[in-house]
Image (cartoon, rainbow, N blue to C red; front, top):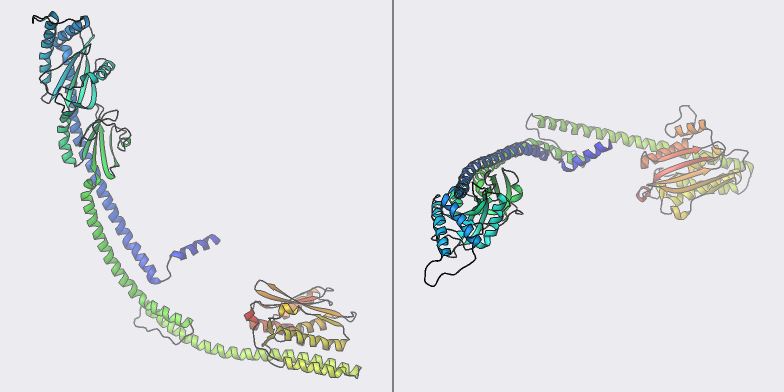
Length: 626
């Protein structure tokens, strides 16, 4: 139950109280939510469709491009095996190996006649050189073919201006790769090289050991350089179609080719692009230079190279963004129009209710001179008619109740006052009569004087408030009269004046309580009685305990007395607790039903009557009456 109340309290915090606000929120959900979700889903599906179509289209183009590149590299690998089946090359490489393997050195003769060594070198060059020209011209694209004997002596076409100047630097690496491949072709990634004219260019190379097919021994090595322009020509059309950029990386992550030619030769293994390229093909989203791109990649089964095409998402989604913008604008216009109609409808429906609420607030302030103008017979008009009839009925009831309560209150006050004052006067006069009978002395004069004070104190209305000091004075006079009658048998103990000096209470509050204790608690066998009044505060209440050490009451008498505080006794002539009941009713009339008297008693242990009053100072302020 507590959890449910907490949930309701949290709900009330954000859920508005006004009817217009509730209806507007409902219409907002009914209009914005469906249209917004529909617009979002449509735009998202359109964007996803464009992306899927783009991935499919680019994948097809990359397949075509990769097929051309694979064919070209396959042709280069096939060219690399020609020396193993070309007799001139085989014979020339063997002659070179024999010549350089057995060479001890020598100088050309001064007579200008060629030495045997020079003639041998010329013969080798003629045999190998003619074949190199043939191999160079097999492919129409620019290729440079290098042949090496087992000692690393190079042979190439002298007239080819693309001959690289770093052969001696790259030869150990080529030799190592060819040795590890054991006669199979090895594809070397793109390198930035300088030709004889010092012009920088990018090439990739196929190296292969030349194996004698009869002895299966290595007699040399072939290296074929291919200009990167071959790949550039293939990819140029792809970039035009995709409006993106293309990147080709080898198995180690080194860049073979990129559209801008700014990354060629660099290793991108730790680049933000490479983590997405973990499978043979696919696509992913990433950022390059802070711009979002769609990356589509595919791996070649021939070379192991990966082709990575990056398309800017701004370019990819340009049509989608325009379509989404138009869709959102149309959705906003529809929602605005629907909301406008809803607002007009809401305020038209709630206008009569707002007027009715304003009239009800007027009624809350006590103004009953209001009337709802009924202009239609709809639900609001019916409620307004019922409101008008209710106000008329309330006016009539208020007038009737006011008149009845006035008469009732007047009758109750008169009844209470008439019950308390005669009861007290009769008992006092009886005391005076008994004293005059027993002793003809000045006590009669004193008692008469005290009686006059009591009458002056109690002659005015019973619900008036007085300072508590006057109540203590009145109570002391009453006990003094009792002591005249019973021979000083009663002792009264009041609270410290400092504890109660600022308090005010209703008149004649404690005297009926003490009177009840005297007449019902003092047994003839006892020599006297002590009556104590204690004051204490309990939270927001002020408690006065009137204690006596008299005979007390048994349970039956106590229950009867407690019942008499609530209602008058049923039996005629039974005056049990009449004074206490009157005090209890006066307290409740003045302070409310939560205040009044309570009684505790045990036979042989005395009685305690507790008076409960509000502790707030304002509750005890009132006019002073003497």
